[in-house]
Amino acid sequence: MTPIRTTSRLTGTVLAGVLAIGSLTMVAAPAGVATAAAAAYKCDRTYYTGNALTSYGDSGNRVIEAQCRLVFYQRLKAGDVDGRFGPKTRNAVIAFQQGLRSGACGKVDVDGIVGPVTWYFLRHGCG
Image (cartoon, rainbow, N blue to C red):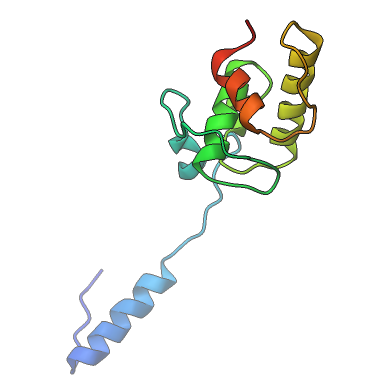
């Protein structure tokens, strides 16, 4: 490509901007490729140590911690750890709570909410 000479600095800058914009191409990520945000959540560390109420619609470290614990108990898939408490997480919490209730853990409310009792069992298991 031959260089283009311009008569003013501004014209060269505008031309370079137009050439750069014209060369942008949007390419969709291949199927199965995780986004950078999703890839950042690994369940090999602790994201949250408290026991605050965590429920549908919440997001952030509390949710990531609950999701990682649910992955450990095989109630959620590792690929579903996204830091957002949506339908999959709620269903996983309910399944976990139902398992506790049917076991020797005593009375556990099956409500799909991660409160102090559910946090305890997510961290320490049953027994």
